[in-house]
Length: 496
Image 1: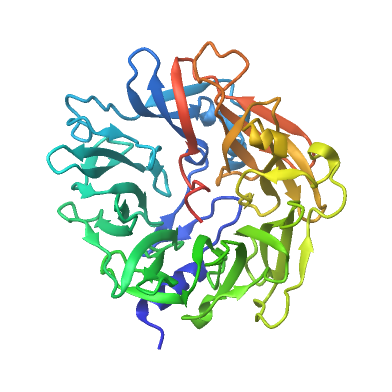
Image 2: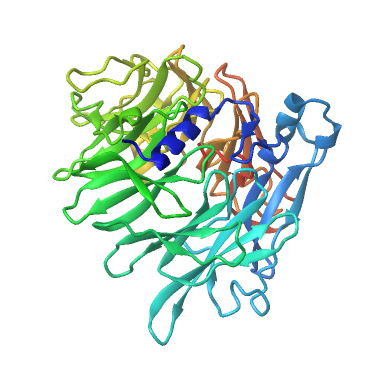
């Protein structure tokens, strides 16, 4: 019989609505869980003052958002604002701040940016250091309330490499890694209890536990668990009790990029073969948990990865799963789309559409031949377009600029919305609180300094599949070295 945790997790998933406009969602307590349209397009970033070299967390907001009468107008505020207001949210003074007062490194390479909770009310940051007596690395995480600026600092944990909130935000997930063995572990911290201590996730027979995803409208989360025999299974974990339910049985090979369908009944992942490392897209029917993987792309002579469910395909519509594949012999990349009401059973190849088949006049070289995919495949929150980054193999080898393209699955033609003339794109993700696809792009070659005329490290893009382009640079008005800009609330990089 399915346990209470699995029933609760699947029930919460089935209730989740992930449409393009931020919808009111019921919390466990029965209240409204709403992403405010303005906070949903507030930009959070890490900034280092060029004069003092002090690093803090900043936010950028459009100044004239109060002038807009409707949510739709406010949704577009970041694209049409006359100016922006920059606010420092932290003051990490080494002599006084307990997070870094012993010389710990703020925002280390393993956790280089502040992680917001779903509503954008708090952020989690990590600082790491080395105990000089034991030579053991440690880390501590802090949760910062963005309204009061108060910090709650978790106790030190050896090997801490990251922290993130559960979807409802009542718990913090603390991820650690042993520096010698590479073994991953997770501890949970109850944020509703100020006196709580981190609770390690301890599963019988598990040698490694890695956070692999969040469950919408829930504090439960997904983990990939490796056992003594080297098999990897997917487990739903309760952060309060540490209890776990196996959703997908252990199988050989590695698992990554887990993603849950909007109705909460299906799971997709990238599977790496244990011998060759060749990647495949796999799916599982969670309504029959514990279950096994069905290989979607085993019939293709290709490396396949980046499964992405269309977030808007709910309410009786067929599910849509997009993924990317590169041919083994030629290296040609293509985007594929599977659509259906029930998952394939694994006995026959699934019927799928090649979205990028034929000519692609707008991509570099007018064809997918010779291109290299250089970013994760992702849908915009309304489910109308797919975003991917691509360039020639030469530009990829030299780490030169790539083009960011959006593709309307109905049209099957990719349209560039950001290219090398605009900057060198790094992170790119959509605003969750927007009626039209609004994209935030980090130009990693721009300095972020006030004197970088014509080049801005934070770029806002109207990612329209019609071919019309709006690329708006954000002028910060101060000398700051900027990294990892994120939309604050409903961030599509971190939350389903």
